[in-house]
Length: 268
Image 1: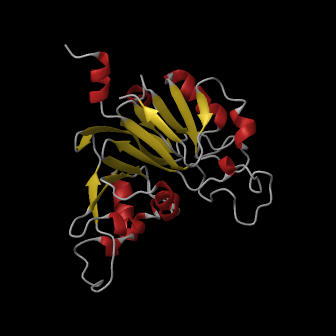
Image 2: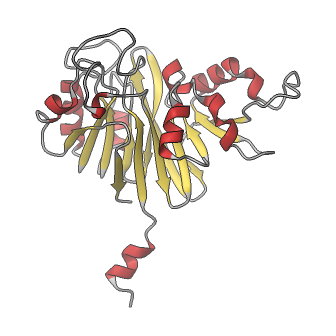
C-alpha cells in the first residue's frame, strides 16, 4: 500500500510566478510623481501583467507584454512550451518578438487565443510566420497560432478556456487545474463563474477603487471572489492609485495584492 507521503510525492507540483502585475502603462508611470510612482516599496513597482505557470518541467506563459524581456531575465526563463493569450491589447502581446531566443531552432512557439486575438497577432507580427520569405538573413520569432474553441491539452496539462468581457471585447480566461486566471475583465459572466468554482487559487484583475468602464474595480473584484470562494485570491492589474501596503492591509482574509516576482504553490 502506498503511503500518503509517497502519494504526495507523485503529484506534479504547480507553481505560479507573477511576472508582472501592473496596468497598461506600468508603475511607475513615466513622468508621474505621485506617492506610489515614487515609492521605495518594490511591491509598488509593477510591470505589465503577465504570469508563468510551471508544472514539473513544463512552462506556460500567460500573456507577453512589452516588459516580457525584463520579466524573462528576472525569472530566468530558459524555455517555454506555449503562450496563452487573454487578448491582443498591446500590453499583453507586445513582447511576442522576444520569444525568439527561447524558441528552439527549427520549431515554432504555440500561441493560443480566441479568433480575434490570433487575427490581431497575425496582422501585427506578420513577419513571424513561415510563409513570409522577406526576412532572410535576420532572426525572427516563429509563431504557431492555435485557435481556442474549447478545452485543450498542452502535453499532459488540460486547459479550460472561458469567455469574459473587457468592455465591449470578449476575451479569454483560463483554468489550469486548481488555478483560475482572469485579467482585464469588466464582467465575469455566469458561464465563466461556473468554470471557476472550487479553486485553490484565483487570479483576478482589480484596477482601482473607482469604477472603470473596461476593468473591475477592487470592490467589484472582491464581490466576484466572495461569490466564487476560492481558497486564495490574488489581485493584479492595479494602477498607481493602489499603494501595496495600505490596500493589502484592508483586504479580507485569503485575498492579497500580487506583486512582481511573487511565487505561489498551487494544489492540483
